[in-house]
Figure 1 (cartoon, rainbow, N blue to C red):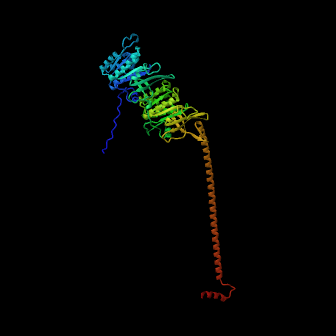
Figure 2 (figure 1 turned 90 degrees about the vertical axis):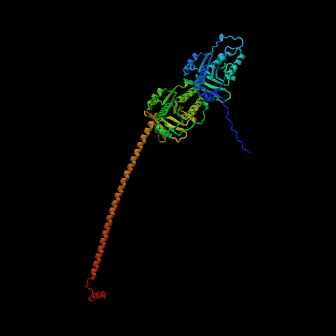
Figure 3 (figure 1 turned 120 degrees about the vertical axis):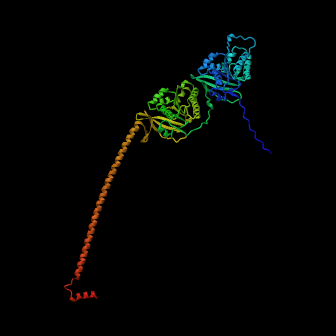
Length: 582
């Protein structure tokens, strides 16, 4: 039986899409708006509908070579050109090149009287002429409410709306149509536009506790997957910027390269510094030196030739530079070299999401190797702890995805120094805890590494001082069962030195006494030895004398025995003499 070849599944056909060129929007839509179909952009006043549509059209011309037609029912071409000139959109130049048509259709309700059957045939003719003239691929209608404002017949209005969207599809142009939201929060005024559109984008401009935030949500997108969450967006100098914050995943790469903290002994405590691309938190109560440690890190990054972005939420750039100069950290030189960028603002300047978008935009512009955020605890003033935690969670994921080393500072409560108000300890790789210790009528700073993932860090407490040469770490002094810092440490060290001196002197005295006794004993031994030697000699001499006397006596007895005795018979003497001779 012949083996049949397994069929290879053909790739799924994808819906053609036209990129808008709007930062972030094409990412969350997977490519842009549907090609050759109408997209409805609805929102309230000031939400950015016209700007969205204009950027879609201008970027289409400049970036994708797709000519476009903009039909406005409220603003004139001159007004449009003037309004978007600050964003760098040169509409008149594009019009002169034949790439763009700006058409104003004036509709004044007071001048219109509906007689007979109403239709949009005239608009179709006018629009078709413009499309054919420049070969337009993109069309914008701004806004539908102005077009149908004078039409009281609901049935005709709905019919014409359907006909308008169908006509745009038949022409094969990629269209963006703006519309206002209903008075009770409906997506549109007439409740029909969202149903006949292939893609519906809602722009929202809300104010919460006096802080405004713009958000974008894709309500509908036929034939394709898309992000469904709300995304904050920012209208910047070059247009709209949207941050696809919820698309970030934990797939960032890691590095074993170390980045100096700017404090030599702190680097040693960390085993060489922070990991590149990791996050560090410096927390402590007021006045513990959080900003000084952050500035040391920024200066070290710039000193290595890398770029750093400093986000200050309490002090201005000049204030930070001046204050750090007083402790020997010259951030001004880093700024002049273009290695250090500052962004100083009050947290209340934007909403939380807007801050996130702004930071995203700054990082894209600066391309830093490290970011300092000082302090993050101030964000509590514009959002709940859970909201701030959410922001930082997304920001950290974004920074790690870029391999950017980040250092955050946080103000801690004196009673809960090992806790942060926004509960981000689990998101942080390295947590440095600063404290002040009050002893002997003074307060001194201590530093402790609470945690540091992936490195064998020191578990010891170090005292540090802020000097005119930067931050200097010293060992804390432990004596008498307690830790001494500052003047108490110096006093205790003096006391211990005095006690050590006394102990050394006592040891030396005892040593000298022992040496004296040893020498005395040795002298006595030598004297005894001499005495014994003398006694031995005398004894030997006495023995010699005795032996000599014994010998003398023996000799005398011998001599006396050899002499003839006067009382002995004469023959006795000869016999004894003859007996010896026999």
